[in-house]
Image 1: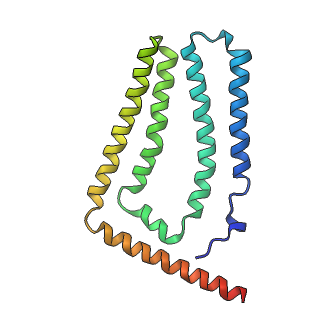
Image 2: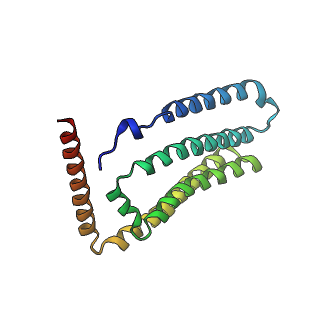
Image 3: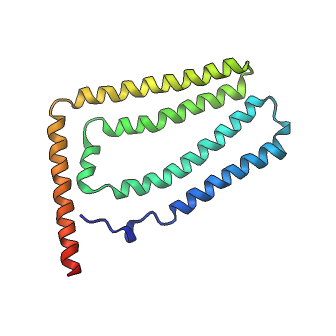
Length: 174
């Protein structure tokens, strides 16, 4: 199955990402310079910056995720069907967003010292990493039985489809 870049290329997504990214930077600079004077203490400013960053990441990530899912070749979609893969991918997306949500809540409602804030950030990062490590380490254990064989078969299917599509494309050009 040959994927046409003209038909399925990223299209407007790079421009959207650039505009949203620069727009976010302009928002942060303008807000910090002109509108954040009424927001006290600085922890609330950090919470607002984190919240705005989450919104930008969700918008850009959603746009690119839809395109990426559409670009998965048919044999590659078999990988998603393996037991637990989709739920692990979902957890890998939700967990970091939840961790940032915890930090936003923490910065908005708690006024501690800089060292306590650093400790909370580190605890959140390490905790999220530990949970994701536990989720993905069980994947290897679940899939170790015959996993290499399934991946080898999947690779052969992908290679076969690529060769067929390339031969078809070259035949069309001649």
